[in-house]
Length: 203
Image (cartoon, rainbow, N blue to C red; front, side, top):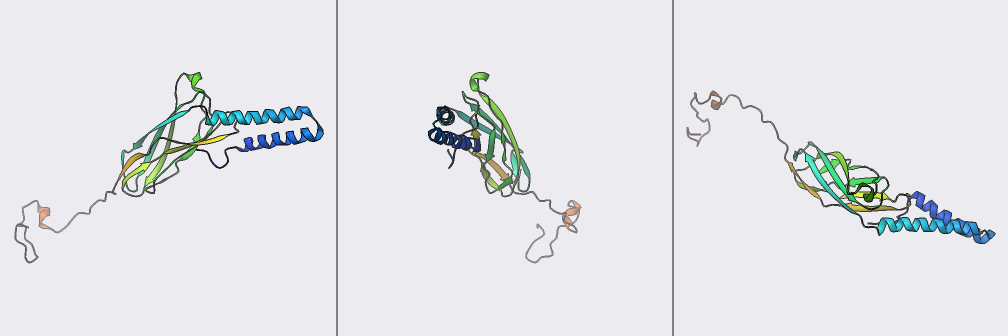
């Protein structure tokens, strides 16, 4: 999923530098500047093709501690991301989508990944954050959004990884206060009589 402007600050600067080289090359008739501008355009174009046309797959699995949370309790969310890509990916950012029933900072720095051909398989990345349960029910966490860049840092790409994972939030457990001055406290040694009309001794 591409944003409004896929170029990073470095990529935008590279394009502006290439345009300036083209303009100056025509104005001052300097062929070398024309070559430099064309080379910069080519590098940015190759970076864009590497980000959007090279096949890449991601999967995410989540685990919760505790598995069933209660209202007001802090939950530790662990996400394991599996990335398969023939090209390395530069460092980026990640963000996990939290429902209104959870509150927390579900963002962080996504580490750079090496080429899948160099490692001979998938790259596993472990992420962890904490969130506070606010409302009971079954609430989905996710999907995980990863914003990454090409190895040159010219093009950024944002992808949604995986499906939401359900988390069950139970009502808050309240401690009941002890009842005093009732016949039941005697363990059955006292006669259980009621002082309310209409109720018999069985109550």
